[in-house]
Image 1 (cartoon, rainbow, N blue to C red):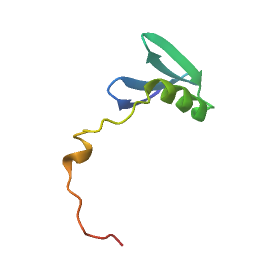
Image 2: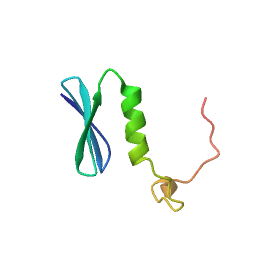
Image 3: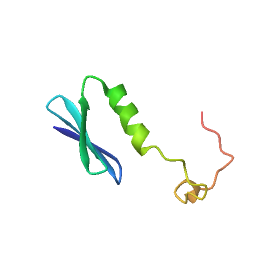
Length: 68
């Protein structure tokens, strides 16, 4: 069994050959041999536009330094 939590309201389990997560109180499963399909299903439900005043993004100040 494996688990991935990427959002506070999304945890995806990989168990017995399936990806498993919950949407609106229902358990959803998708075959583990199709991660792209599972990601597509999850993104349709959990994808949200970014907030314009997202404080997490604005917590840093850009610099003029260059990386090699």
